[in-house]
Length: 255
Image (cartoon, rainbow, N blue to C red):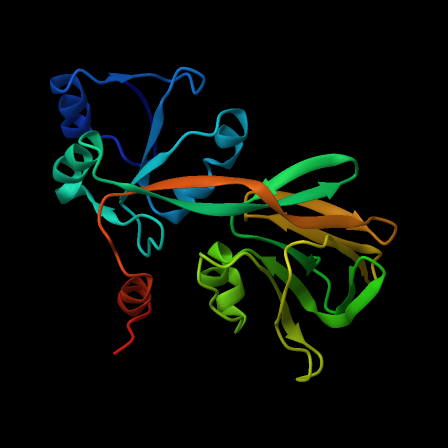
């Protein structure tokens, strides 16, 4: 077995993991094409950074939580050895999370959490975002922006804009307006089987496209952004039968 380790930039002292791998005759590699699994050391942000790697080779991810929230990183560093031995013994399951597939200016991008269309940084005026599904207009949103999220992303940026929480087992797309002009503009959950088409108008003629918080592009009024739920995604290794609602209670401090 070969393992690729991906970690938060500030994490330097991971000798205990490297020692464990050596003791168990597991080789570490920097080449994703040679790797059988990825060990992710960080939080959910570190997992988001794996999307380009998983486009190259779709392999399972063993995530260890070094972050602050960690909806997807459920193994603590203290339990690493115990949990990884369970994985080696075949005592695990796979939790699949779908990507969004985005087509923008004839290029394909993937997002695990969301895309957002936002007014430009210095723009005081609201922008108008049109969202279609096939030939059907869903809404024209006058707002600071619109977030299009996966179920995974429903506990990220969309949640901060009062979007709904969607269980990760459900295949769906959530559209959430960001600070809309009218209170009647609400989040809506739509089928993943039909492509969304988005465009934006602004006073300056430019708005911003943000993909998982990592990629940023200016978009013009003539641009169309096509979004759908992809068959591609991330496979998270789970060694414990953790209840999703228990995770929500813990992370969101529910009583």
